[in-house]
Image 1: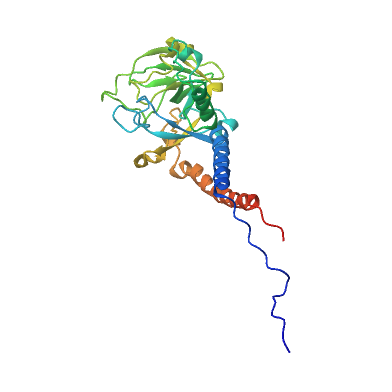
Image 2 (image 1 turned 90 degrees about the vertical axis):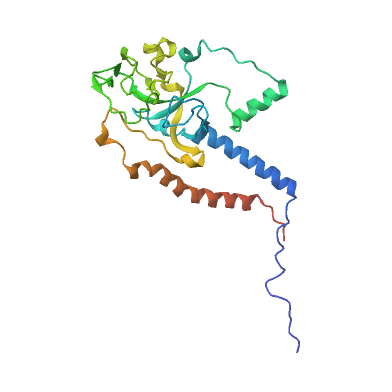
Length: 282
């Protein structure tokens, strides 16, 4: 007696039809651009350091490989910048009012392409951005200097281990008169203290040199390029003194959170890819 050798359970399940290569490439490019836009505008962005005003915390010196830093755009949604934070911000009007207007070269197509690239985040933004360290916040007074050539905030000297003296002379800070920082603004200075055009000089100094909170883009977190300088960017609070500076495990918290989030994101991306791949009906 012959047995039915056909497999049970109905017809074989046909494998999904493979999409054309061009369609897969377009899908990948579209997803990549969308993710780039979302990350650059809502989570963080990489900025280049164009000058040496933050040496040696951030390299931007002539003849060296300028640092690329990852700037966290989320943190200041939940709190305001605090003393010691290294922040990236758009130049206030008082900082840029005398800048020469840049000539817009190229035809309409190239201008549109540059605008789209800046909007998505794959091209440099068409704006003047700065990176400095927060020294004082709204309501505080700042002045320089005491007998030991230290900056004073609310009459107390700052602890500033991050200062770089380009000429090797630590007793050469330029004095400036007491300034009361208006509410909603920041007093910022460069770590390369004698080679930084910051709140002391911009707009003529004084209250015209402060940075409104609305101009702050985010907090500089990590040096991502060059590889030899991969590290976190310190945010030692100069008003708290050395005993209250962040410990090693606290500095590593953001990185740990990032690694913890990476796995769910990877799993979700695979599920989305599977969902987008059409299957032939049985």
